[in-house]
Length: 82
Image (cartoon, rainbow, N blue to C red; front, side, top):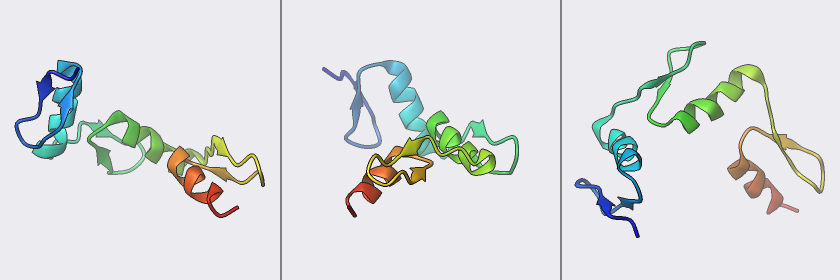
Protein backbone atom coordinates (compact mmCIF):
# COMPACT_ATOMS: atom_id res chain seq x y z
CA UNK A 1 0.00 0.00 0.00
CA UNK A 2 1.21 3.50 -0.90
CA UNK A 3 -0.95 5.97 1.02
CA UNK A 4 1.09 9.12 0.31
CA UNK A 5 -0.05 10.57 -3.02
CA UNK A 6 1.63 13.34 -4.94
CA UNK A 7 -0.65 16.31 -5.61
CA UNK A 8 1.20 17.11 -8.84
CA UNK A 9 1.18 13.70 -10.58
CA UNK A 10 -0.30 10.19 -10.23
CA UNK A 11 2.60 8.77 -8.19
CA UNK A 12 2.16 7.54 -4.63
CA UNK A 13 4.64 6.45 -1.96
CA UNK A 14 4.95 4.25 1.11
CA UNK A 15 6.28 7.01 3.37
CA UNK A 16 6.02 10.75 3.78
CA UNK A 17 9.81 11.28 3.41
CA UNK A 18 9.66 9.51 0.02
CA UNK A 19 6.82 11.80 -1.06
CA UNK A 20 8.71 14.87 0.17
CA UNK A 21 11.80 13.90 -1.77
CA UNK A 22 9.75 13.16 -4.90
CA UNK A 23 8.00 16.52 -4.63
CA UNK A 24 11.37 18.23 -5.11
CA UNK A 25 11.31 16.95 -8.69
CA UNK A 26 8.24 19.14 -9.28
CA UNK A 27 9.49 22.19 -7.38
CA UNK A 28 12.85 22.25 -9.13
CA UNK A 29 14.68 22.12 -5.80
CA UNK A 30 18.09 20.45 -6.10
CA UNK A 31 19.60 20.21 -2.62
CA UNK A 32 22.40 17.76 -3.50
CA UNK A 33 25.33 19.86 -4.71
CA UNK A 34 28.53 18.44 -6.18
CA UNK A 35 31.60 19.70 -4.32
CA UNK A 36 33.76 19.51 -7.46
CA UNK A 37 31.59 21.35 -10.01
CA UNK A 38 28.43 23.50 -10.17
CA UNK A 39 26.02 20.61 -10.79
CA UNK A 40 23.24 19.87 -8.32
CA UNK A 41 20.65 17.13 -8.12
CA UNK A 42 17.14 16.48 -6.85
CA UNK A 43 18.05 13.06 -5.48
CA UNK A 44 21.14 11.90 -3.59
CA UNK A 45 21.38 8.95 -5.98
CA UNK A 46 21.86 11.40 -8.85
CA UNK A 47 24.78 12.98 -7.02
CA UNK A 48 26.31 9.56 -6.30
CA UNK A 49 26.17 8.61 -9.98
CA UNK A 50 27.50 12.00 -11.04
CA UNK A 51 30.35 11.82 -8.51
CA UNK A 52 31.68 8.81 -10.40
CA UNK A 53 32.44 11.10 -13.35
CA UNK A 54 34.97 12.84 -11.10
CA UNK A 55 36.40 9.73 -9.43
CA UNK A 56 36.39 7.47 -12.47
CA UNK A 57 34.75 4.72 -10.41
CA UNK A 58 32.99 2.08 -12.53
CA UNK A 59 31.55 -0.45 -10.06
CA UNK A 60 29.27 -2.33 -12.50
CA UNK A 61 31.10 -4.86 -14.65
CA UNK A 62 29.84 -7.11 -17.42
CA UNK A 63 30.21 -10.79 -16.55
CA UNK A 64 30.58 -11.68 -20.23
CA UNK A 65 33.29 -9.28 -21.39
CA UNK A 66 34.54 -7.50 -18.26
CA UNK A 67 33.71 -3.99 -19.45
CA UNK A 68 32.88 -1.66 -16.53
CA UNK A 69 30.22 1.03 -16.17
CA UNK A 70 29.35 3.89 -13.83
CA UNK A 71 25.74 2.86 -13.32
CA UNK A 72 23.66 -0.28 -13.43
CA UNK A 73 21.27 0.91 -16.14
CA UNK A 74 24.16 1.38 -18.58
CA UNK A 75 25.43 -2.10 -17.76
CA UNK A 76 22.00 -3.60 -18.43
CA UNK A 77 21.76 -1.78 -21.77
CA UNK A 78 25.26 -3.00 -22.67
CA UNK A 79 24.46 -6.61 -21.76
CA UNK A 80 21.69 -6.62 -24.35
CA UNK A 81 24.37 -6.26 -27.05
CA UNK A 82 25.83 -9.71 -26.27
